[in-house]
Image (cartoon, rainbow, N blue to C red; front, top):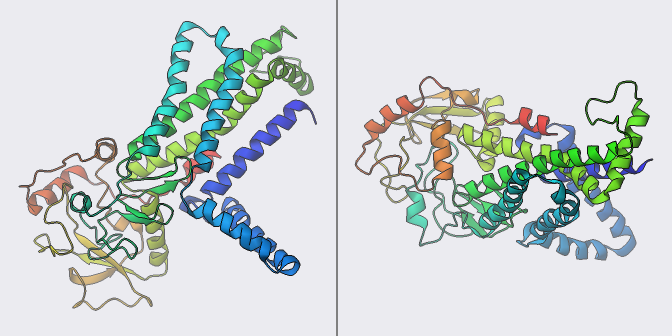
Length: 428
């Protein structure tokens, strides 16, 4: 096995296993080989080790490893954040000495910007407040979003924090705190991604994706120039006419070995760039759908309930009187809920005289038949992410006016199921 093949194999293996380990739980990847590999890494293999250790050491080794693993997986610590910073900085240390003198002025300026921006957005996402819900911030976050009576219902307190949960909030078991508009806990920033720092997280993904692609493409140009020093007929693409693949890879390997730092980092950048672009595309798609990673999992759970025939909906009256003990009297969101969605254990329709809403209960079979209250359309969804606390409506606006607003913002556009399988498949 040649040097180039070894480098390619190692980089590809690391990239693939990193993707499986961290993203194998995505709803879009359920019932796929990637989900099975994720379970193998986190469930099947640990269980086999547990059985073996029970026979050999009566479980002492696994208890010690369990305490360490519990800290690594379920406590907040900067291990992966430090690894991410080292990956960026060490890669740049290996890459820049061989590339920088050969760059034009414009590429030096663009390169400097693309190198600095990931560090800036990583810092802002890591230290920023993701939207931690405390007694001091509770009333403000309660006025951000109305309860949709589908994913989020009023009157549900957090069993850990003791505070009433605002709509779109979730308790993070890693950070041990409730986060407003919780998306997920990201080990790469050692912080939750939530209402307060989601825009920095998206910009971190964008800047890192641009850096890996830009650096990889420039690296290919440098490697090709080095390879032409051994054979002037070499071209990176297309393969020179009349050359066999063996001849092509021999000269390419010589170009990589001319400066191993540049060559190896170039390969790493090109291998990891599709993963970063895929993750960025997934989060942009979630914004397009007006949802979050946490909410997309909830919608997938609802789809399974619908498949079983256990999901029902009915209307909420526009003149509904809010329970001010559990709901904010006014929210900045421009529309109010018009439906309630509930499940039953056996698929029997609920009692029409009980529960919120009016009218008969209607069985629901598809997500598109349920309105996603938090989807205002792509532009307003982007405004909500990148302009925190943006006032979509004034305090004096009534509920009847907001229903007209719903018509203007959602003209004949059915709610979308938050599925990103095609994007993730393309990224891998």
